[in-house]
Image (cartoon, rainbow, N blue to C red; front, side, top):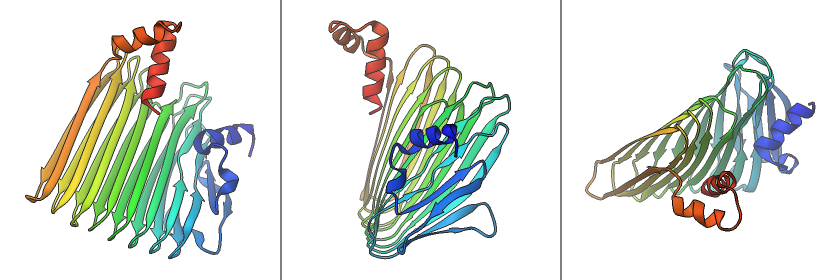
Length: 305
């Protein structure tokens, strides 16, 4: 790996790469580094591009890193990754993709991730998407996440896109059995003429299943964002969906909520708020000596934390 590769990995993973129990680094469509442990294995798929990650039963505090980096202009990389989480296991999985494009052709990564959580397992999944480069070729990221949860399992998904991604379509699907919990936290910042579309589809099939989806977004310049949620409560269950957005300049945001109660015992809530930065917040920070521009930046940074 060169300095550009290392910088992309730092943006996606921070300084955590060497702390993982199992690692697979993908660059420009090929695996360039892999390590496994006795209790977490990574196997290349034979029928298509991608890997299978196997976490054995009763693994405590396992850590898996599977970042992707793209530095080749004009490349479209599609990968299929499946995660099989054993019973009673507790793991952290860090993924995400960084694209560096200095030329004129579009570079794109489409990652399709499927999670199969066994009984009483627990997963924290972190993905960060980042783009950079001096070229006018687009940096395109289209993540698809499918989650299948068995009894007693829980999952937290933190998804962040804060810089340099020109176009993205982000799709998350989940099916929850009884006594499961799914928490999703999404943060997106767009500027210039960037577009970001997000869609959540959650089926609450088992009694006492619950989900909490939070989307926080900032659209500036001439960018556009669209948020769709489709939550189906098919039994005694609970769901809370929040979509909060700040618009600035000519930024535009559309929120399309849909909740369906298929049972009298389903408790479903959806909240959406879209607006500009409050004048009182600006004045308060400016009274402390900040310029209007710096005050706006501070408010946006705090909103996306």
